[in-house]
Length: 134
Image (tube, rainbow, N blue to C red):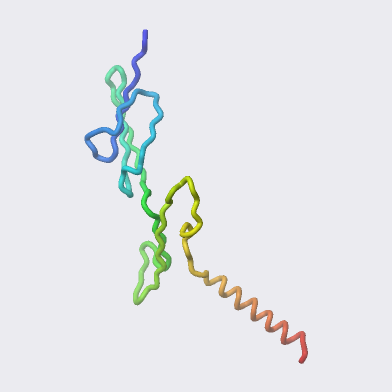
C-alpha cells in the first residue's frame, strides 16, 4: 500500500496564484531575481492526506539591486545646514567573476587617524628638537 504524501503550496506576499505546488518532502529553489527589492513574505500551506491544513509564514528581505552606501548621514539623524555626503552604489555583477574596480565602498579618512598622525608628528618634532643640537 502506497502512503499518500502531504501537499505543500507556496505563495509569495499576497499573490492568489501559488509559485509552486509540491509533494513533501521536497527541496525547492526560490528565485529572488523575479522579486522586487524590499520586504516579502513566503507563505507555505501544507495539506495532509486526511485534509488537515497547516500554515507557516516566513518574512524575508530581497536585496538583488545595487547596494547603496551613504557616509555623512545616518538613520534618524538630526541635522541642519549643509551636509557633505559620500554616496556609492555598486552591484554584485557577474558572481562567477570578481571585479576589483568599483567593488569597494569608498570612505573618508577617519578622524582618529588624523589625530594619531598629528600626535606622532608632534612627538617626532619634539624628539628631534630636544635630542639634536644645531
